[in-house]
Image (cartoon, rainbow, N blue to C red; front, side):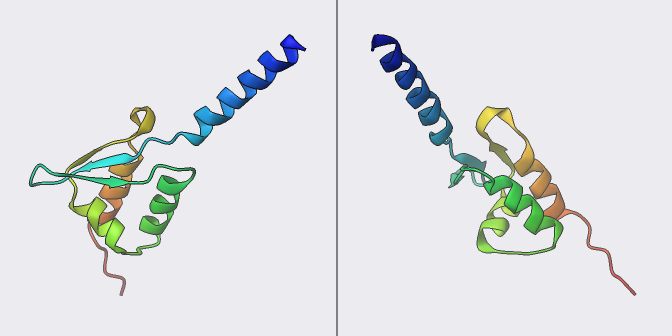
Length: 92
């Protein structure tokens, strides 16, 4: 019975690790920070919307930011910022 309890405890700890999500911190030009959620596919969704040219208040926040801190040291928000602030091409 003790082995089953330990196994269950390990599984619960692994599940908790997946559920505890660090927020994304955006550093703004005035030195302040803004927080974005970091759960699941949030950043991937932002990236997809930036590729499609969508603009929302949260995307404008990313565009105005100067840098970010993401879980695991990722740089996906930097890529989103580059897409949002990149040159706009006029299509004839």
